[in-house]
Length: 330
Image 1 (cartoon, rainbow, N blue to C red):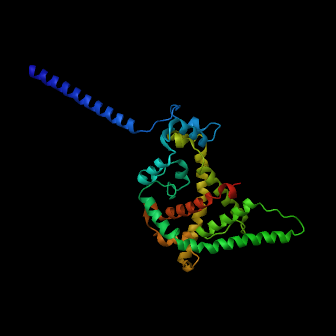
Image 2 (image 1 turned 30 degrees about the horizontal axis):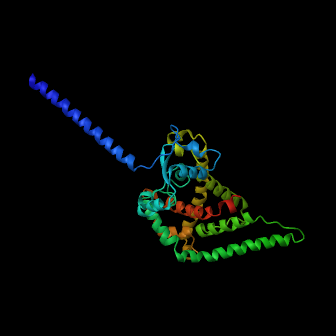
């Protein structure tokens, strides 16, 4: 009986020691993390964090600048469920993007890049990993080389000449009247045609099919607007199924329309390759990708067609983003 009681006391004592050890370890770990963690801005609300501070009358960059004055060059915010690090010092930025660049090499996952970017297949918006490294290597060697850029000079020159000629023809038809040209749209048409010709070998703006040209313009406009807009489900992912702001519905509609264009162009390029017309010198980027990527090849679970369409789409998106406000969307 006494032996049984002593064993029970020993078990309780041992369990108490184990409990105290675990609690002490967790407390020390939390203390170390708290010492290393940058300060968090005050004013956070439950569930939404600091989102209400960034949605006021002031632009977000002004609000963040005021926070820098208050909390210093590095602090954290809670954007819904996501903890966000804010850095405004060049020395700390150097630590993030040079010394510890791999830790910051990935990209945040948001609904826009998932729906519009073929499930994070666009290289500019895909997380850092094997897929990103593979596609980046292809893009660097085959698409962004000095030789490829040199080949685009003829495309640029021909589009500028075509735009000037079209303007001149309009003036000839109305030489007895004053002719006005909207320069923002005029430059935007040139840029859009250059990129479409370089990527998929097509020229739409100013072409014969004005209806299809306008559809492409609208789809690109929607792509820019939706990819840069805020979606509630990005900050509060558990509310995504409700689609409270209707953003995901718009994204799916735009993604479907863009995919229809790219699928038609891809099938056309495949037919041309089978006919042997890919031996021409003026190969566009889709031709180059088809020659590099095998038809049955997979990239981290993505089929070849998805990789090609996503890469072509991101090439157009990145280049046109520099002209967004001034040329295409205004």
